[in-house]
Length: 509
Ligand code: NAD
Image 1 (cartoon, rainbow, N blue to C red):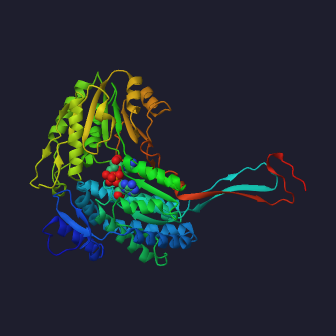
Image 2: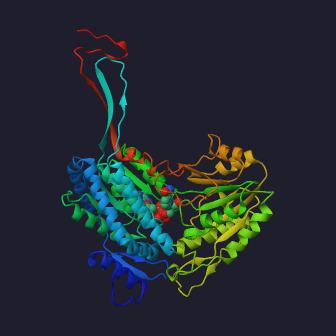
Image 3: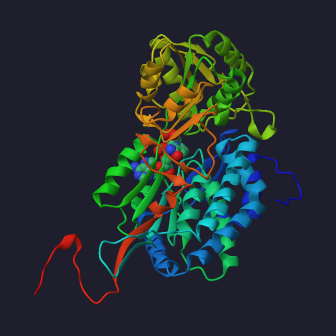
C-alpha cells in the first residue's frame, strides 16, 4: 500500500488497502452486509450481497468457463496459478494486514496465512505437470489398461472466518490446475479479505490473458448463499470448511444429489505429555497451540493430558505462561493474543467455563480484558484443570480454553484422547519410542493429523490436511488431495485382433 498519510482508523486503513489492491469501492460501501474489525468492533464496510438468482447465474457462468478451461493443457493452467503466486508475493504485506484487521490475527499470523497461499500456489504449479494416472497390467493379451484423471466441474468453496483466505487458496489453486472453475462463498464475518483475494486473482487472470470469463468468482452473502452452492446441480464438489454443525447440514444435502463433499469441520484436539517428555519444548508447543490465534484455529490444542509424574513440573509453568501472555490489539505489535471474533464467541467461552466449573474444574484466566472498545472482545486465555474427561471437555468451544487432565496409564489416556466426536489433530510429547510409535499406529490417535514432539497446530501445505469422524473426513492441500478435484476414468484399449472377455467369460454369437 502506498498512501500519503497514515489512515486515521482501522476502517480507513482497510479501505486504503482495498483500494491499493484494486477492489471496486462500490463492492464494500452502501451494501446490506456490514463487516467489522474484531480489534475495535468498528465497522469496516457494507457489502453488496448476492440474491439466490444472482448466485445461480454466477454458477452457470462458472460452468460455461469450466467447459473451456478443462481443455487447456494442465501445465498451462499451472501458469495461471504461478502468476497468482507472484501477485500474492507482491500483495503479501497488504493482504496480511487486512487479515489482521478483519480476523484479529497478530501480524506474523496474518502474514503467515498469506505465505500459506503462496506455498500452495508453488505446490499446485508443480502438480500441474504431475496429474498422474496409473498403467495397470491387464489379464487380456494385446490390451492396455490405464487410468486418466479429468477435470470435474465447478468447485464450490465455503470457508470459515478463522482462515479467511488460506482455505480458499488451498482449494482454488488445486481446483484451477485440475481444470475446474471455482465459486467461493467466504465467511460473512470476513468478506473484505475475500474481495481482496479475488482482486489479486483477477490481476493474475488479466496477465494470463485468455482465461475464460467467470473462471473464478466470489459470492458475498450468508449461509443462504452457501446453500445455493450446495444445492446447485452444476456443482459436483463442494469443499466446505466450518463448524461441525454446518457440516451436518451441508453433508446430507450434497449426498442427496450425489455430489462430492470435502468437509473440513471442527476439532477438539488433544495432546499427551508423557513422563520422558522434553518439558521445555512441550511448554512452548502447548502455549502456541492453545493460546495462538486466541484459540480460534481448527487445530487449536484444547485438551491436554499430563502424566502424573510430570504434572507438578509442567502445569505451574504453564499457568505462569498463561498469566503473563500479552493480550491486546494485534496491530500494536506487542500482543501474542488478539481478540475473539465477536460477542457470540465470548458468550460461548463464558458458558463453557461455567459448565467446566459445574463439572468440578478449576479455572485460571478466562476473564474479559478491557482495551477501551466496548464492542471488542479480548479475553485472558483460560487454563482449566479438570478432574475428569467429561462435560465441556468433550466439545469444541471456539475460544482459548485449554482443559488440563492428569493421567497415569497410557492405554487409558489413549482411549480418553480418542473419546470425542472430532478427529482433526493430535500430538504426543515423549522421548520413548514405544509410546511415540504406538500413538501413530492403527490403535493410536484416531485423528487425521498425529504429531510427535510438535504441537497440534501449524500444518505445512505439503501434507494432506483434514480430520476424521465429526471433522468430516475431507483432505485438502498437499499429498494426493488433488484427486478429490478430478474424476477418474479407467480405460482399456484392445490392440489385438481378437476379443477375449475378462474372467474367461465366453459369449460367442
Ligand atoms: P461456521 O460453520 O459458522 O461457518 C462456516 C461457513 O459455512 C460460513 O461461510 C457460513 O456462511 C457457511 N455456512 C453455515 N451454515 C451453512 C449451511 N447450512 N449451508 C451452507 N453454508 C453454510 O464456522 P465459523 O464460525 O466461520 O468457523 C469456525 C469453525 O470452523 C470451527 O468449528 C473450526 O474448527 C472450523 N474450522 C475447521 C477447519 C478445518 O480445516 N477442519 C478450518 C477452519 C475452521
